[in-house]
Amino acid sequence: MAIQIKEMADVRYPDAKKITLVADNLNTHVGASLYKAFVPEKARRILDRIKIHYSPKHGSWLNMAEIEFSILSKQCLDCRIPDQQIMKKEISIWEKERNGHSTPMKWRFTTEDARIKLAKLYPTIEL
Image (tube, rainbow, N blue to C red; front, top):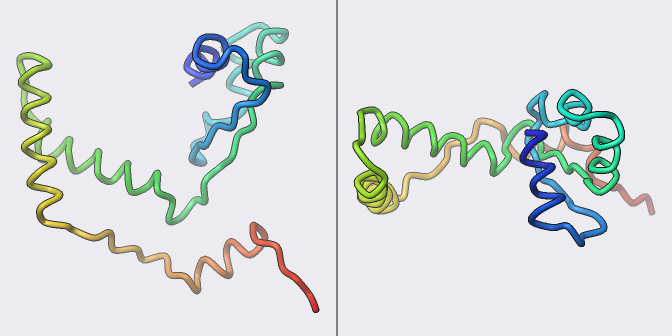
């Protein structure tokens, strides 16, 4: 992760004063990973420009993306594919079929659960 963040800060957005990074709660998605990969001065320089916004542990859109990638891997990419062109074609066919079924996500984490577990993330106004 540290190498990708450095590339983002130094190559893609070199003029940005602050970069907001949306990340899931994986234990490697922390500023300390920069210090493990780079000398302290370089890590601090990058970290000063990064603001990491962590998605909720439950019910994140990243969870949905991870679920879809898992399904893609099992249903479409579970065999040897000889080249990138064929892989793109196979994924396109899989994607059209998958979208045609409109399979909804079935969350077990309810709105009521979220209001309890994530209460600290939302401001409350007392009248």
